[in-house]
Length: 390
Image (cartoon, rainbow, N blue to C red):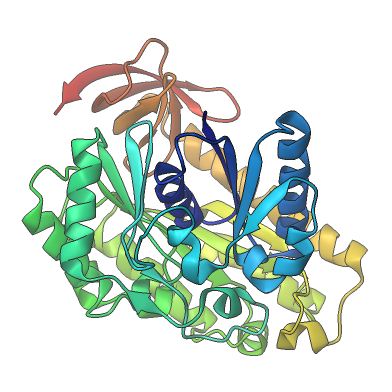
């Protein structure tokens, strides 16, 4: 008997899926589908994943959980092959007695995602995730520390802290990171998932400047580069705030790289507004992006705003992706001929500390060290490992 997992969407989902799978009954075949509802496309992909799972393993039972399941449980319960639909509040209790606030971890090769927080207290006009996840809840430090220790015991070389809004962690994300690094000397590589730029605290900036174990890649939830669109999204930062945050990160850590979430074609967006979002790529030196064409989610204020034509939304998203891809290619090419610290995560591939993807023929999983960058194949860097560290 076996359990198969399918995770869609955020890294928190990936962490939770592994925790659910570990408690699956050993005498039954299960497929766990952890759904996403961030866009209509994510919901479509969830339904597609369920149909594919049932087609490929018709005798297995399918458990559907996650945000899409929370928001429309009846629709998923009616799908062929689905045996159980579980909302977010009870997802970690799907198979066994587990508290919903038990830290979840996912060991993917040598990188493990550990959840520190769930839910969101903000009400961005485009987002339905707060409806699916509920208010922000932070896990106790001791529970997170113990979860990190367990993942290291299982072989993890890098820990990624994840959640819905981790910069809203109670007591401050920076202090949490400081505490984990002090309490767990085996933690050599700590990485952070998506950050709300306006919530980055002084303690985290101190770590960025002085702690080499904190990996220098910071993915910001920017969503737009135009002030009027940011207001209509009900974001809490301005364009100038985003630029200042990135400047402060770069001043603290020269090798830091910046990623961002951006939405194209938000309701009422004019060409001038769209160009401001395009320009934010340069102004914030963004080299890694998640770009979404706006998708009106049910029961959200943005769904009731004047919508743009879908073809225009798609065209603006494509333009933004093309510009982002060009910036990323130029950034990666700059590494050729240099030596960079990196971790080999599996199958001869890994990432530098600032999250540039690298392929190393014959490199062993879990190796961390200095890599000599020899080329760029159009998707990732190629390299040879020249020095290994513990």
